[in-house]
Amino acid sequence: MFEQLLSLVKENAGTDIINNNAIPNERNDEAVEAATQSVSETFKNAIQGGNVHEVMQLFNDGGSNVSSLPLAQNMQGNLIEKLMQKFGLSNAQAGGIAASLIPMVLSKLTHKTNNPNDSSFDLSSILSHFGGGNFDVGSVLSQFGLGNNDSKGANDKSGGLGDVLGGLFGK
Image 1 (cartoon, rainbow, N blue to C red):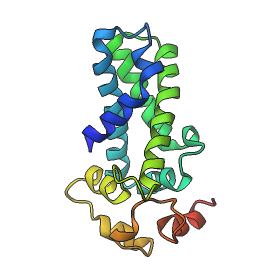
Image 2 (tube, rainbow, N blue to C red):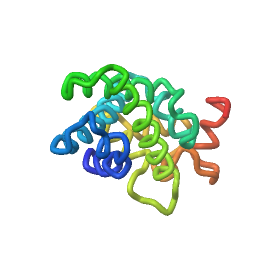
Image 3 (cartoon, rainbow, N blue to C red):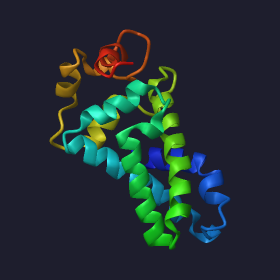
Image 4 (cartoon, rainbow, N blue to C red):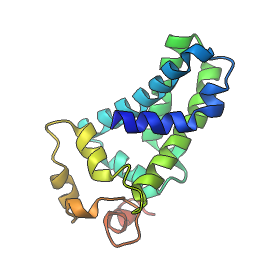
């Protein structure tokens, strides 16, 4: 899962990291990895901390208005800290990178997850991976009246998880 996220971040890091003079070219991979870690750690902390609803809200939203979600804001804060510590960036520089890159990555992630023709990400795998060994994906999905086969995306229009969560989050 980390490698898939790393690839997604790298695909979207052009302007924010790769072509950014504040980050030396020889450290671009390190900056991409820091962004990926920010996404991964925040997913893990939310799921294992009992805030699965924040993750589900992201996927229910379908990738629009991502930056206003608490999960995305936490990821941005995490990345700002990492960029300031590892690269000596100012809060404004790091904040600009995080405010641009994280919403873009999350939007692409939700679109890939919700696209039935794209098998690179699925909600069940995301929940399972970041939930750790003590996380029962089937139990969470059953709380929403679904089984694992209904978990491709949270915003698909097939009467799956998206329809169930739509009412929950006022979509």
